Image 1: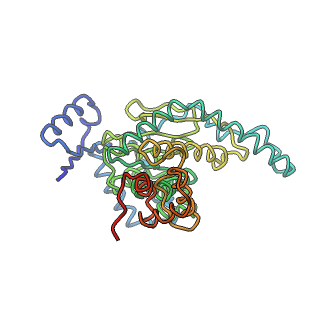
Image 2 (image 1 turned 90 degrees about the vertical axis):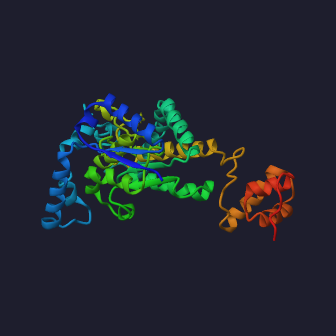
Image 3 (image 1 turned 45 degrees about the vertical axis):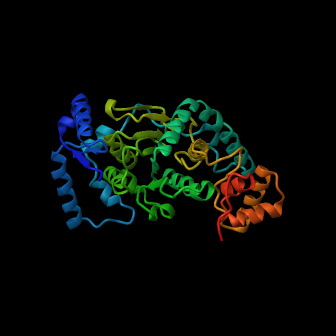
Length: 364
């Protein structure tokens, strides 16, 4: 059975060389040991316990988690978060949209499209970092790891959207790519703005999901400073797992010991509606996540040519698509492709192997 070790105390936080040696010696004793470091000095355990007791006796948790957020601000959180040296571009007013309230709809639409045209070039500037992250994700998935997207509000919803598309598109288990949003399921359809301030909840969410050092987490936060996201990144860092950040604020100084392995930061500039990061930042997020999951799935063999060979043929449209894929890949007629897929239980790869003489038809 796997052994789990949790290391606590200031010495593990402040003496990285000692900590590395300690971990190595533990793994010499138990090769598959899972080691986590609590990213808080021991005294904070007492403080957290007191905060929880106080919250349970005097504070009713509101639906938007604002009450809880007030009780999760700690010096640790402030030590982990990057420092903004300037106001984030997403919070600056865009000069071209200052008359948005009186602008004609046609002119406003042209402005939206013109602003969105700048997004691909901003993403292209981050190409090397995105490719590095995709490479890590691909290798991690091959070794049994999982990818977690963690965000709040729009960022969290986009992570969930991308993750939820992977099982039907690539035939992978839902656990392989997971989306995590501050505030939990309710926050998917209902605003819970205060939940993003809960650093401790981000840390605990990955704990509850059994996150280990084989897994990877990509934090998504337009500002780059969302406490919930940094709580999750801190937990991953304590295990020695890969952590990345997708943000849109280039004016951040990261604490030396809390810098993610990669920071992807397309400079999309101010939003047409000041501060509404569901606009350009949201569009850019979706484009980046599209590339991360699609190219990672290519890397683990879920695509042949440009075809989704492990798509789940769960409805009429997808079954027709599966048949046409088999026709394309094996050069047989539609009816033979259909009957072979039926025999193979709608497994496209198995059907192709059967038609190529490399696989056996399942026994009735």
